[in-house]
Image 1: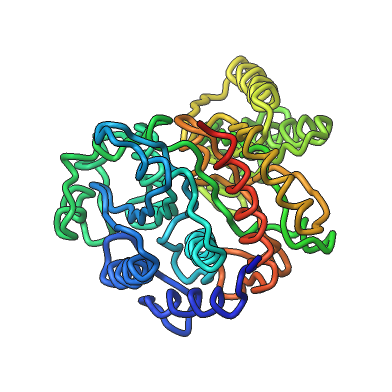
Image 2: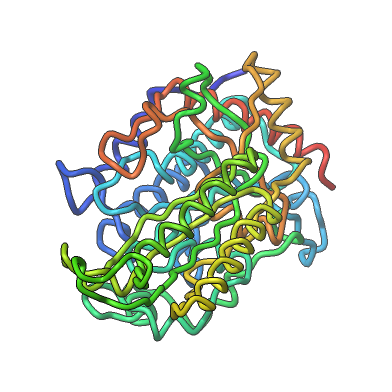
Length: 421
């Protein structure tokens, strides 16, 4: 059996890296730009070389499709056979790396090449999906392509969100040649998409630290982010006794310490980040009258998210009783996503078939897969990241590790192709 070719994988990644608005400063390829169009054109050419038909949907997801034996054998033209799909996102963060997102699409190409070299025609159609606007760097709202596939796209953002030049989402898509008014047509379902597998770099240090090339993702964390505003009273920092102060910073630190202590006691992988803090008036000799800060919690367990923020809210209520004005603004709310047991089992068989040690781990970052999992069976395979680095020019995953991922997904697809009616 022909296995994944590391040189081809590297060539695809380096070619995609050329479509970049910040050469020498990492990869910047925002959705609906000329660089994005060039990358799509390259993928279109490669897919067509591999005998696939290619289309772009209304939000700009690029889809290559090779029909399977079942669809070719059906005499009634109305019969529709659900596809097995592999892919990830084509856009990047600003000044990021060349592996995030791109690896999943390149794996899709390589698996199609492996099928042809091995003389394999799947029973089901096979698709490669290069997804648009996952990172959210263009309009400030991420996972747009994945949400559209899942039927979760919020049409109101077409006219409310803008890029840095002031263009609305609708205008940017229209200028790119898309039909934003037809976004509802992007929605897929289990009847036409049986499985979606997203190979992706880990963006963390676990696999490399354990000397593993790939790992199976069993869940994608839920994310709850809140902006909390605490208003006390600004006073002279030298003449106001401690017991008479309403210090917003001290009140804020009580919340942060409470949340951190709660998360540490959970011991279930839940993490907490308070990454944005603004203090007013911000003078060294003035008691802080106002603190504005973010609290972000990520967990595979909804109960853990609820516990952390339940304790935060209870303490905020105490602060209100002590004369502080408190408000909470929701910034993000994503529920934890459990991935398909059927796809996980198939990926396990792929790991065993290729002599790879099985490792199952959650994803601490959000992905298109977390939305697509709402409409079909979804699996993810993580690929080791050097030093755990991502979203920076130093991002790197070795061709050997990426090839391992291709081999595992290829074997899993063979299994799923036979198991799914």
